[in-house]
Structure formats: structure tokens, C-alpha cells
Image (cartoon, rainbow, N blue to C red; front, side, top):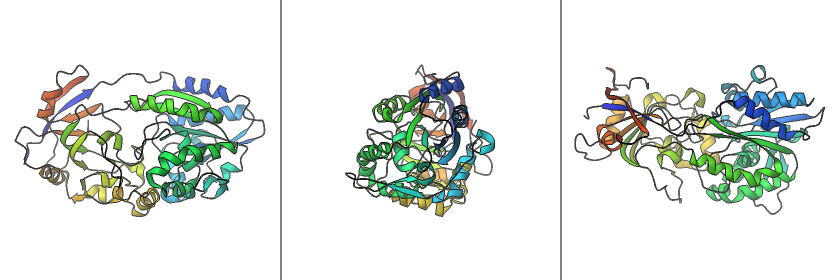
Length: 414
């Protein structure tokens, strides 16, 4: 058994979070002046991910629409998430503080859609019926690198317009074509959606390496196709990363839909697991161990197949209906397959280490992280610590910490 003592380090990423998110949102919302008519019904499209300050952004958008003497309401724009049910999608939004009581406008959820003309695009197009029947739609979403593909548009407003607002039918129509559908069909499909003039614009949100809001940009519908790629590149440059590119075991205390769309961010771990598509160049990790599923996931363990070992604690939290609805819609079945399951964290760790083959004692390359969204605080083994201790952006907080309790489980991540 490896002597399980790791050192706690702190990575210092660029500090570029907005100091006044509310003020920035209000300033950007003024770009929609003239777009919203008094007496109109405006649908506010909101997605399902754990976005920094999302409740504030939504509440400010609703207040802005009300000042224009219009009536706002919220629609979940999250494709097939929430088990592809209206109640499931409302529950997800509630977890993020998006309720009428909290943000000042009703949430109207339905899986009913209207089909959009799609001449010249092979896949059928759909839009949430409630949103379509409104007098205009404002989208709110984070721009970031996607966990499934590389393209001109990845996670963001364009994808929300086609897949998020398309509900289960829209998501299925694109995912039917696999990665090709996501990377190649999104641009022309979004062009058809925007041509309906139902979408007035969107609020693009960019987060930094600390998962904090660093940019808010309001875009009119006609501006989204040209400006979203620039915001995507900004987001890509501000992603967090591990301090080394090659190690033996990665321990993640949790995975979940509020952490990444696929539970474990593939951009961070260097694993894609999509049949027929090459794996990323790095980082290279021999074994990934995940010990828990976040409560905010509502049992959705999409991405569990990216791990090699999980605990029974995680297994017992999986809602297979919700998970498989998401997995089957995406068509990326590898990500839904169960890894080896261990009764305790200690047993899971031993299995992960054993899978790496023989490693000379003291030379183990191990990193423990809370999840793939928070990489500023990490625990690392002695071998890795020796490599990084001279880096100016690394701070050694505590050395040789015993992280296993008497019951064979990891102590809380501090």
C-alpha cells in the first residue's frame, strides 16, 4: 500500500474577475434598448450549468425587461437535460436559484416544440413552443470550450439557440449526426434559427480560471455569429489546468452536471471517449478515480465512463433514467459505462494505483482535486511537488498531509 500523504498546494491563476458584476450587466443590457416593446411578452432562456452569478444576471435581465414595460418569463433551454421532462428541468433551474420568488418572473417549462423550416440543413430544427409564441427571446449562457468537440461555436449562445431551445427533439436531431453534427451543422442550423427573428439577442458570460465572472457581453441576434468565436477564444485562454501534464492517478472528490456538461471536464483531463475520434494530446493520466456525485446533478452521472474507478457512494446516487436519457441523446455511449466500483475511497485508490503498473516507491505521481472546475487548490505527491516547487505561480500551503480517515475514506477537501 502506498503511504497516502500528499502536500497541499495553491496555483495562482490570473486574477481578472469583475469587481461589479451587477453594474456590468446593467451597462450591457442597455444595448437591447429599442429591441423590447411595451406590452410584449419576453422569454428569458436559461441553461442548466453552474454559472457564476447566474441568479444575479437573470434577475437583472428580468428587471430590465420590466422597466421596458414588458412581461418577462423564464424558459429552460437545456435540450434533453432533467430527464427530458418539464418538471426535471424546472428542478435544475431551482437548484441555481432560478425561481419566480428569487428572480421576479415565472418559470414556464414545457417539452413542447414548434418545428422550424430547415431548407438547406439536413437536420430538422425545433424551438420551445412557449418561447416561439413569445414576442421575443433573450438568451443567457456561458461561453466556454465544449467537452465533446472543437468547432467555430462550442458551448454558448449558438448552441443554446439550436439545442437548448430545441428541447429533446432539437438535441436528438443534432446528436444523431455525432460530432459532425455538433461541429459542422450548428453554424448553418443556427442561421435558420436566427432568421426567424424570434431571438432578440443574448447575454454571453465568460468565467476565469477561478470559476468567477470575468466578462459580460450583450449581443444582438445579428452579432452573435461573428462575435461568439472571439469570446470562445477568450474563455479558452482562461481555463484552469493541472501543474503537470503527465501523472499516474487523479483523484476527484466529485463529478456532476453543475461542474461540467459531461460531469468531468474533458478539456481538463485529456479524455474524450467518443468512438472514432482521437483523444486530446494531453494531459496524460493513467487512472482517474471519482468518489462522489454532486447533489446538484439530481442523479445525472453523465460522464461517469470517463473515470476508471468510482466508489459505491457515487454509484448509489445515480439516477439511471436521467443519466441514460442524456447519454442516449448525445449518442456517446462510452461515457455512460460504469467503471470499477469500490466500497471505500481507500479501496478505490488502491485499485487505481494497481492499474498503473509498478511504480517505484516515492515516485508515484498523484494529484487530488475537488473537481475539474476548481484547480487552484490541489494535493500532490512528493514526486510532483519536487517538480513544481520552484514555479513562481505555485504556493506550498501544507506538506505531508494524511488524507485518509480510520474508515478508509478521504478526509474533507480543505
